[in-house]
Amino acid sequence: MQKHAITIAPSIMCADLANLEAGIREIEAAGLDTLHIDVIDGSFSPSMPLGIDTIKRLRELTDLAFDVHIMANDNEFFIQEMINIGVEQITFHLETSIHIDRYINLMKKNNVKVGVALNPATPLSVLEYVLPQVDTVLLMLINPGFATDKNEKQVRYANKKVTDLREMIDRLGLDTRIEVDGRVSLETITDLVAAGADFLVAGSTSLFVKGYTLAENKATMEEKIAAGLKQREES
Image (cartoon, rainbow, N blue to C red):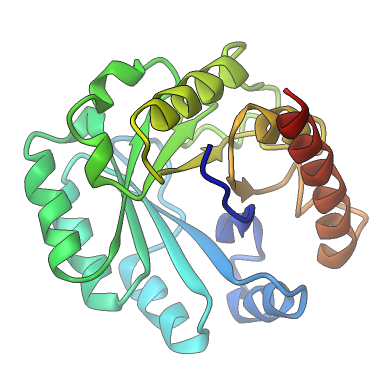
């Protein structure tokens, strides 16, 4: 298995949307280096938290690496907009993509890392031909854009899907990272890391748990990650 440092990527949607600069500064002060940004068109998923101009402004405010997750039906438009802004990684959904290789080539040509995302029930078999071309596979562990439903839990097969993807990546001898998104909580992190996840989208159930500072929550996350890595090494 390829070994990556575990990345914690705070979801900007969980910061104060009326004071994003303060949220950015708090994330930077906590020693984090990656920001997860959801770009949602209101059609693929029933929310639309940030506009393109807001993301453009955020780019001017910080050197954090932008990990952009596009949840849209018109991927090429948003991919080009994010390339123009200057983000580090763009992830798009295979479920809404017709010209997958075209999108991958567009990003590679512009030196942007390539991510592909799968909804919870989408099988890993759709990755068969594209996996060697991508840097990251993002596995949605809840239905995209429904995080506001606090009662929604991770799909019951979340850990199995991560394990199966890790086995597929290792079998092919690839260096692809596994990103997980959706209720990546203090209760689930250890198992997800043990299963092979190495890129954690951190939201309201982990880094932004109320009643604690970002630094305190980050320290707790790091304890859970260490436990997961120990389990991984022992298995």
